[in-house]
Image 1 (tube, helix red, strand yellow):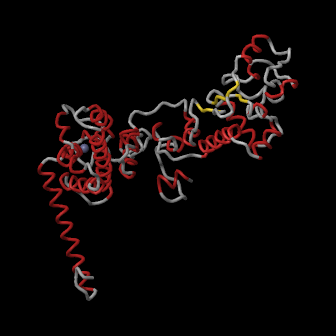
Image 2: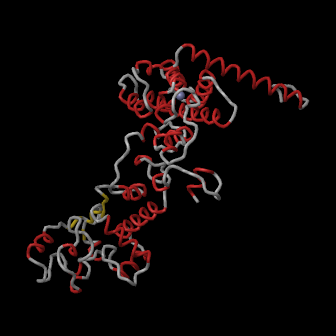
Image 3: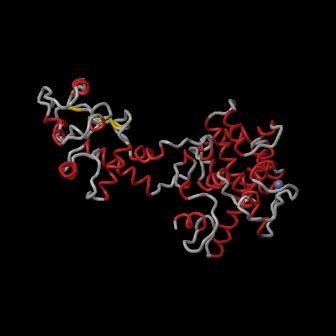
Length: 393
Ligand SMILES: [Zn+2]
């Protein structure tokens, strides 16, 4: 239902969407849209619960401790579903948590189950024995009194564990004293590799509309002729922008004469390209340019994402309606969209002088002036219609 709503709008009906919901819900750095799914939220909540179980005192944690002893103790069959989930998560995050023992928490830490022995628990070293299932304070009263059934080498390990000051942190997460919920949630994706292109699409000044369509393009989620052909869906294969080459993701963005004419006029640095780039090549090229600082690179990425949106819109208009914009008209729309987002920024003047050629700059100011004049005329006309005169009304 969520994927139908995101990709198509209505909740009912069945339409084709090209990206799996599981991939859509990944964090942006792992190639998704950053929508939190129930699995990662549940994992984050479980980690947060375990964290508070050791880091704070409350009646709830005391009750769970009395009932189940420790989250690291294997769940019995008659445990609640909630506690079974907590135990499953605790088993997976044992290596992330480091518990320090002090005079205050030794009465609440399980001697056998909790991982207070340098990230491991006694249960990892010796077989379970009911005689060892008490708290640490049962075996320590200013000095250790360890049962003989614990092997000598493990006793040496226990004796080497220092007792910390009660004011020191009792628990850390990979060295972090105060981890946030996002760190807990992202732990579910710890085995995944970050995608190199996410920072180009989801940078600090990104616009959701433009970045979303660029994300779809990179993930092969736009319904281009070559993408659909891989799923045995065949549409008119010729690119409607240039009417000469077969449509594909790499052609439309930006090997096509039409789309390259749009993007290269906004980013004159692309004139140095010997061959027409794909979008990922374009991102890498901008990223490696030493002449641009971070803001200027973000501006380039923004322009590229905006170009993807407007070119895709033009492609669909040509396929499904009679609308037809020249690359000059499309470029003008693109400039307006970019200026609306960036004109309030203190970097706007710098971007204008650094990137726009003289003709584009003149076109921009002419367009803005014309729009301003049009708005003034419209307000004047509306004022007359209402029986009052502009600008006093
Ligand atoms: Zn084309």
